[in-house]
Length: 143
Image 1 (cartoon, rainbow, N blue to C red):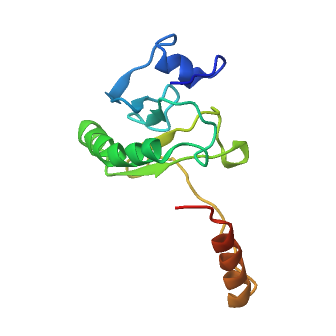
Image 2: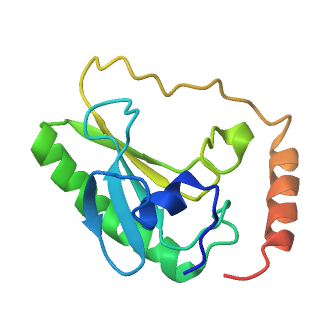
């Protein structure tokens, strides 16, 4: 599988940098985050380097989503977490720090202090919302 020399996740996949894995198969590796928001915070990384989920193959994306709930359930049992967040930051403006696709599994606890809040916006009108939806539909290349 293609790797990138200066990618920390590619180095982890090649065993050049150690990690503490919780799951591995032929397409993905899941390991504990070294800078967790909560203990048990894990990352699922495809074994093919892509900086964006928009270029990653469907088989990798499907596997990431297939194993995520199973890994999350195990993390919840192991940490006694009360819930979890799944999130994927795509692009630096979205908070992606490592330019290799990865899905976060973040166990959550009451009053854990982890804030995932954002202000919401309101469309000017229902027509503006419908217009944007139509633009998006026209630009979906294939599903």
